[in-house]
Length: 366
Image (cartoon, rainbow, N blue to C red; front, side):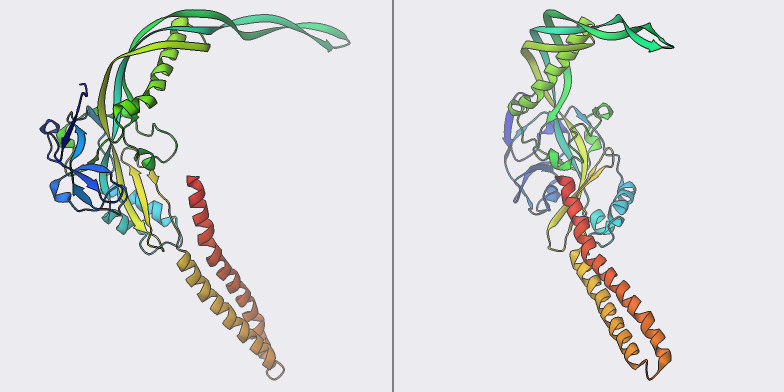
């Protein structure tokens, strides 16, 4: 299936087999394919703007493949419960139930590009060979010679022509995709588990519209094709390694299709009312998102602990003050002063702990 042209429309073409309108976010301006009943809902990317119907440039061809989401409500609940409960002093809005209530299944587009490479190449190929040498060792009062077999590469110049067809090379189709990666790895989705697109897989789910056109996406795809060609050259040469490799390629018969990848998005509000977006990979269950501890709660708990520390310290001093009159009460002073010290340490912990936790969360993104 070849993608040839854009259409300007506010509705999904019938070729997809599902009813969708095209809507833009009023805040981040991302475009989505949504059921008409979803108009005015909060944007599943930024959770700050609403979705409004609009005309957009859109490709009429349906996707070639899709990876169905493997995360149902029960598994999402377990994943988010672990994600939330590892934070000891949480913001009031940071709860499993709130995240579940706001959870959306969204499909992200990725381009799949096919191309034929025709071209000439030159390279230096490394072939393994065993080299016999000897070393002299002094042992038992005399020098002895010992054979050593080493594996080395013999380098030879090679040149030739290549004509290969490579299919379904993935390349980003949406600039928001990086937000959903849990690491710098662009291959977090196993495309081998994708299946042919079927409208029955998508019920009321939303679909993000590509905002990277093929002519721009090709800049990221071309190095992958050239690397694949280099690997085939090494195989053709029967070489262990290739260096000084140069290819002068022509890329023919480019064919662009889409694969849809599942991600679940949700959010919570931190102490300052800022949106903290949480994403779940719909295939693997990997979660990305900052888990912000509540500094406000830290100060509150620290204030309570410090109040207890101050009160017990003053009571302890009072006990020591009247100990000459009532000697047994000095025991109370000996008990209260250590309690005051412990309460002070606890107050310091409550103040510092959320700050340290949040600092680590921001460092993970750096």
